Length: 552
Image (spheres, rainbow, N blue to C red):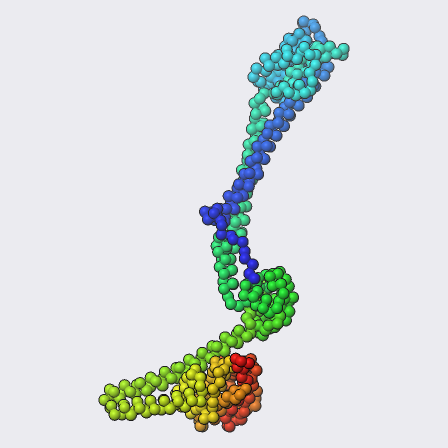
């Protein structure tokens, strides 16, 4: 059965935007959702890292200065006369230690007197905030690393002598502007990377959308969904089984009619054959020859399961001639033959009707001419003759053939024989009076009609006597149909091929289906047909059909 695809039509979003726009919007949202939270998180992390780096630098510089012998010696000296020179020495030393940094340094002695104020970055209110730290923590005698780390952008250190006595205090710090500028630079860089990622994402989305649309031949998803539904309806409306096989020989598509036909043929688990190897299901079909070698089968008789099908198999070729699979279409052979038989029977009826119409119009023209000439006596005699001859002809046929349909058909053939200037007649020994079930009147019309038309064709251009006799004999268990013509006859080489499909002995283009259908119809009725013919001696067709009545 045809596997229905998911309903792809419910695209409220897709109805407003094309595929390209949808992909661009989707990827833009994905990039924004992915990058923006990441950027915010990273910004917080960067700010924290900068804060940690500044704090660590402040503590590091503070630790170096607090442990410096030069600083200790300078703060230990109490000589009032050399005090300015000592402070200048400490300031130069601080400048050497902090030469490449922008940290501010304030050095206090144990009496909280400011000895050195080093502020290359012009930190605002640095002296006041440094003194506040000294006043706050001097009474403790020491400060922990955790407390020191918690002081924003600054660090406090105790300078001690060898005995462990506090001889001074050092405060190092950075301005908030340094921290803010570093954070802003990092945020701007991350924002730039986010925008760059968004641009790359949009460009990639546009390229991907164009690539997808080129693969989809420029169709939008809604159009493809509609085409899939149309294909679904089309495949399931076809009265032929359709099976698609991929290049690996596996079944990829089975329409509903194929499912029904295969099930009727006795194939088990028809609902599960999708994806199965075609050779396992269609065992007598040369699948490998079709999908590997590009072989084509047209109207081939193939037995699948317990049923004979008329099958056509065509390989699927790409533009580069690569075979990507095959399509198999098939119908029951009995159904095809029945249809052909019906069409041929209708053709016989139509031919007989056309001949009668033509004969009737010719006689009407004669009548109209006699009326125009006011030859009323001749008109009366002519119409009486027509009526008498027609009545005699109808009575003759109907008396022997009780079936009205068959009688009308024979009368039509008589009219056609007059058109062709052929002497056609129903023999006097002909008789048919049974209520037929098998064979039906339609079967007799099909068989006799094709044989009679074949005799007419043989006599069209024949220079000798042009006679065709039809006999229909009804026995207890058998109907015998004999068609005899006085035509040119056939030699052995032609006679043994006349029932083959497509064979025709006509000089003009012939289809060669008439006698082929006759033979198949007779075989389906368990009958027989024989041909007697020789060059210059005419031809006799004899058909024997067993009768199967309703009570049987």
